[in-house]
Amino acid sequence: AQSVTQPDIHITVSEGASLELRCNYSYGATPYLFWYVQSPGQGLQLLLKYFSGDTLVQGIKGFEAEFKRSQSSFNLRKPSVHWSDAAEYFCAVGAAYGGATNKLIFGTGTLLAVQP
Amino acid sequence: DGGITQSPKYLFRKEGQNVTLSCEQNLNHDAMYWYRQDPGQGLRLIYYSQIVNDFQKGDIAEGYSVSREKKESFPLTVTSAQKNPTAFYLCASSATLIGANVLTFGAGSRLTVL
Image (tube, rainbow over all chains, first blue to last red; front, top):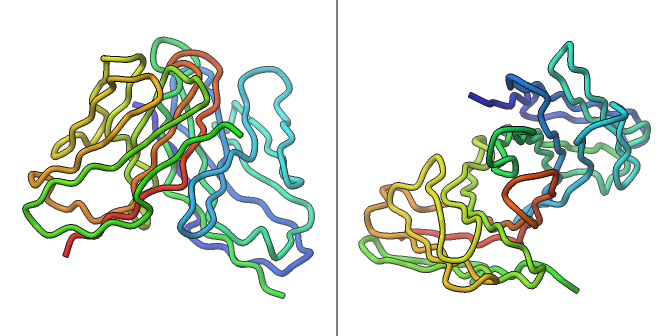
């Protein structure tokens, strides 16, 4: 069965510092991969996605993520964090083959706090 | 602008009552989804629909029901059989159920059982 693990429940970084949020998935083939961001009491906004091709994908707000098949990972990075990046971040996986590919499985989320 | 509208934003319910959450989309998407969000548990799939008049159970369908009579609408009913209904509910849609598509989410509905 598919699963997604976000090992960091809560991360605090200083404004201007770099950021890396970890995501590991379990899936028997190449998955579709997503990162979403959620502000308190709001819905989820797509940051970036990987379907195929270049394993380094660029997203909105200066975020990027790298798909590493050998490590089953899709870590999210940003070189310089802004105070407005404080939010909860969710990694999600969808099956690229064999059925309901958009029936996504989500990780438990990482809550990012930004110190001034 | 196209998007997903969920209503109400906040809802309070007494134990034993059914309540219906509305989800409307104007994106012309075929597929729609309901997720439940609890602190520390991420999002869990309740029901999904690939097309009008068709829907399937997700991972936690017990105590919930849905209908899909129109392409743009996918209401969720939280019944009295749902033992722990207090949660944040998110509706989403995608162009199709299968293929390289992106889920678009609504702003959510927070249900509190008193």
